[in-house]
Length: 321
Image 1 (tube, helix red, strand yellow):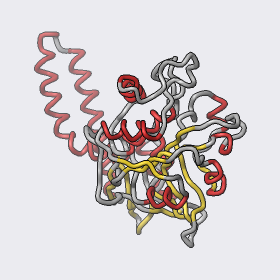
Image 2: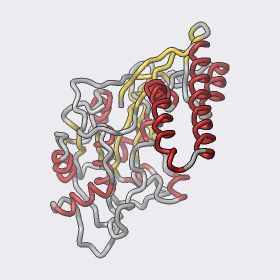
Image 3: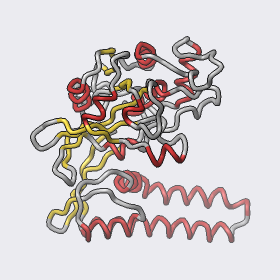
């Protein structure tokens, strides 16, 4: 994930519209020519078309990044104009004298190697109630695993493995559940021979540490503590915690189990006190009932009450975002 800033004013809106109209006009013209051109001439025609489109490429790449990214605060009129032009919702913008100043985030994981940073790229933004929220948890969640057990039918207990994949994704690597499960099976880092599919794929914090180490992320397993979790998150570090899921969601989970989840953000009030945490639960999209009943935010009291003293949590040594 990387953060950028761009100012969009009236001229930029006009330019953006003209750019896209020009590109689509050339596409339509090329199609029209192609329909009238003998097959043996199509190669030259499309070679010419490629040259035309190359002239748009750098601008198109930049603008596509802008319009598919995360924006800050809201100005209704400019937001509506941008949405009409772009054809999709803009989350946030801020008006500045007839312009729109945008902080946007390239959050799609597309790196070959995980980031290990000296300090976080992000900070706090204010929500509608004046609370301080680290990073942009709702947008980040779109790229994380929320449907454990997709890799193999006989491996449904993969919450810890999905959490490892999510740490890698937060670090910029497009890790899949299947590749993490495959590695864990091959190296005896998960339960794999149980007759209960819900047990297969099960892990403990030491397994998470070994798996992430293989992919280039060093980490440590430490006692679970609210303040350590909060400070680690706001430093940009990756955090996996072990919880009693029944304490978080008694309507979804039975008492007495253990579950690994990825912590994605911390929320503080205006005085700096911890109010709650955003998480990614890898069961969140498993079925319609979970989608309707699992949340991604918990108050600090609920969250702290769910932390188990049976297992440690994992914290990466370096900032990964």
